[in-house]
Image (cartoon, rainbow, N blue to C red):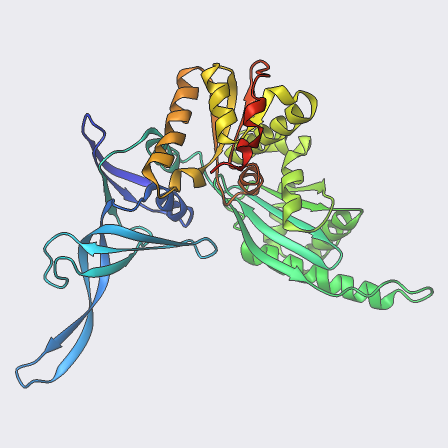
Length: 383
């Protein structure tokens, strides 16, 4: 994401102009947009014209519209963002108050205006415009007959391919059918890796499985790469890292990212820091439960006691349509930071964010035990 301009008043009203440069920037933009905002962008409008002879025709014209946002639709797999609203500025093609849907495009600027820019939204702009936050991890989570090829970006886990094949069991004295099916499966996974992973961007490719599947696959992969002279695989061999997982399902990616060998390799990425924070929370919940709270009421009580060391919260809570609810979480984040705590905002499209959402979307690791919260044990069901 490129920041073109930022014009904010003392009361934090104002506008920013941004240019989305890659697909993930659409996810950041989705998190910036709220109902009631003003969005100005280039768009295509179908215009009906009538000639002097009375014949009617239509053509598509490119124009710039400013709409008041009413609905926001984000396609997480295609990373496409559509925003519908009413036109609030004079335009030769769309009358005032007319509805239009803008599909934001890569490398085309847009201007977003808000009555108030809160700290969480402004921090997301900083992250989106920071080149250090890039999609540099890929993962192949597999077992015999099942593989998921994923891209792990700082903000989301994108499933790029799911490969599923029936592998016959080994029969006593005859393993040929099993071996042929397994080889065909490995070939499909290899083609998926070549098709879906950008080796110029990705710094590490995790290959995870139970048993010896990952070793067998990597052996197959590089023997085939040598035999067929697949240079892109041979040149990037050092990027492949084999890790244990309990299964080939997508959810196993969480345990893969918790592996010490992986966290050491990914030490500088936001994804790794989120996974570590969530792992630390679960350890604390198991060993010292009075220092690990979840649910908004309990976490707020812990914050009042100045006890929060690390706050874990999902970005989904900041997209809440109710302004008061959204402001409640923003105040919590600001307060924890003011008190010297660390705040980790998890993406709801990341495997770690999905897990945190199961714990109400907000949790905290405390500096010291705060035991007097028994009255709020039911708060994990709040909001």
